[in-house]
Image 1 (spheres, rainbow, N blue to C red):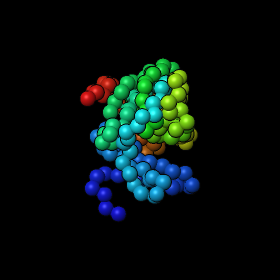
Image 2: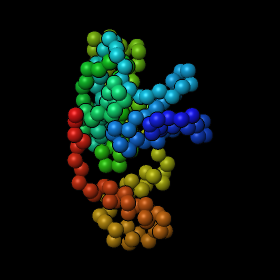
Image 3: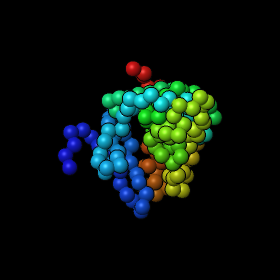
Length: 186
């Protein structure tokens, strides 16, 4: 199947679906619809409003993104750990969340793309949605924790890890200690 734009495929792996993370905010992503066809993840026209509160339940800052009507990823706000953001949206609008440091996708209800459920459309009160980290393997979790606490290549090399692990940890340490600037809003 030929696609004119980059695609992020949904792959079945051990019965679970996974997506490749879009590196570029302008990159379009696709999902499989109810007919089995690839469609661009984007906002659709809607009259069913959704009064949302996104609460960052992770231990790190998270960027909140909205997919516009063309499918472009638009930055809305950066949430520090434990804070929330209220937004008046629509049930057909997709939202995404990424860790500020690692750029790792966060989830709501174990989904990397959040759309308000149809049953809250038109409700006159705000509903809360908790942003959490995805389930990770122990190795990834340990590497992230170490990277947060180490200050440079020398500290990584002092651990005496096998080279492949040391190289991976060193790149994570670099990510954690680079300056962070918020994305620009259009």
